[in-house]
Image (cartoon, rainbow, N blue to C red):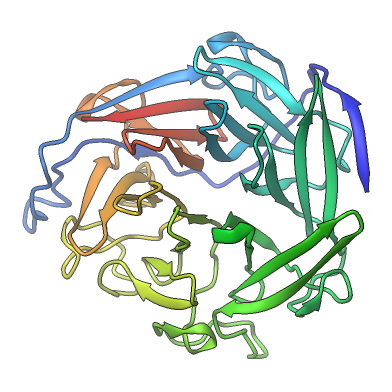
Length: 388
């Protein structure tokens, strides 16, 4: 299914009810005075708001910086082909250039009013803005720029959820697909949150759509109450993921990263389907703890993004939980975990301890690994975190 639509700017009121959690920042943080975690590297962190106005009514309004308005900004990806940030905003996709100009790429009305975009990633192609995205109604789409318009192709079209494999669109193959990522050779990976599994899709053609969906990693949930299998690393279906996974990301080496919410981990899946944990497994500790990967811990990872070389994996957590904000953290595989933006009761732009984030809907990193974009869906703004 292809569509060609002129890009327009829309403004529409929208109310949303979401769970609150926020984020503060810095590189050396004490979880409590009795048991302080190891001190991280001396990293200077700056947080600025680049688009939207905090607590403004939710609308889809284009503009520069603070004059732009967002509906429900969540997952993001930075496209180095045109130096553009793309933001899933409810059922829309917004673009933000390096001068903080916000435009509507995929307008309201193209998807159904209830078909919220759950995640986006880069799709192969020469043109910036060629993206894949998954949506709430168990669909997988491709969107491409087309002069001053865009073209969409629905790759998987299944309303009913399922975890089936085989030729694309011959069965119910997506079920709460809360994560999508592109691997080497154009392979598409998606995470079926209802089953705690990651599948891969090898596309042969887009017109007509042909390809094959195969199991990639994670033992499918088969218990009557939907509970996850006990935690386990391993290859393919030998490995298990916890419930509540809402984000995956990839690097240029073909590795896929998973924010494993219930297992309090960031997991790495190689191109051959081998799953490993990037720091120690301590399910349910309820605390962020910096240090070497054999002692570091995390409290409910929610979002993940990777530098192309795979040397720095960024993720957000619940931080201290409760009324405290979530944290933005970085794991350097095989080395350590460092908190960049720490848990806090405050909110605002600034440097190190003076800055804090709010509810995080998604993150995206630039190729040099020095800039991390953060969307805040309750504040309805886009923040930029730079590290030195």
